[in-house]
Image: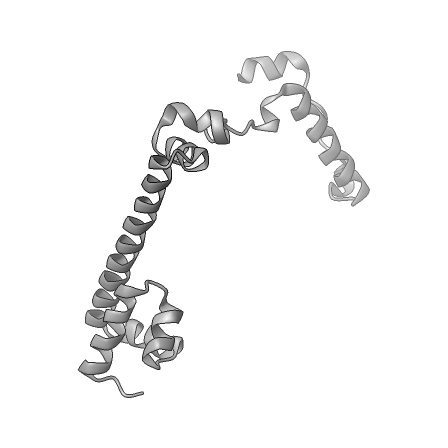
Length: 147
């Protein structure tokens, strides 16, 4: 389809109503490849595309929030939990453990030693050290001085 002002306006209006590029393309008879090519080649179209998509997402988000609020008004526990876990930091950990940080397994000195030993074993097995062989282990007193 030829890129005319009417076609572009129709597509952008549809993108605001339905912020899914594929759906907007289907409703306006355009291919995704065409739309993304126009976006790549034309900065003005790209700006309008981004703005229309942003507006469409904002409308859908408003409707979704309205549905959540209606669920809360109807005393639906699922909506209440969702709202609190999304909006209130005190409830995030209670419902979804979002604030629980991942532990670095190599923070433990025993695990560091195990991994180092395993790496050396693999290097020896693959003969990765060459003719000199593996480097000697450092004595405990030198390790402490480096820290």
